[in-house]
Image (cartoon, rainbow, N blue to C red):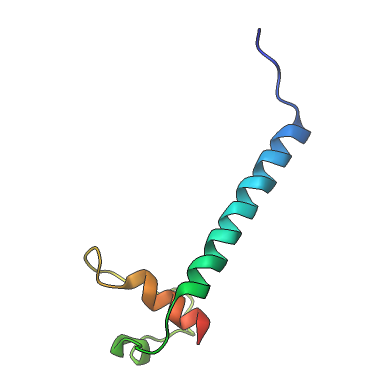
Length: 71
């Protein structure tokens, strides 16, 4: 038989999921090295309302963002 999901159950699921995402972000940020920073770091206008980073898989887009957050 189907058990109805209450709003409290749903809120708990969302909280646990968000906590997992936050922990994953913290681990990725801690593991990011800043000894080598890409040259594109200085050419991006980080103060803009929106920044778009486009490129092929594996060229370091996520690493660039994590290094910017960390530095």
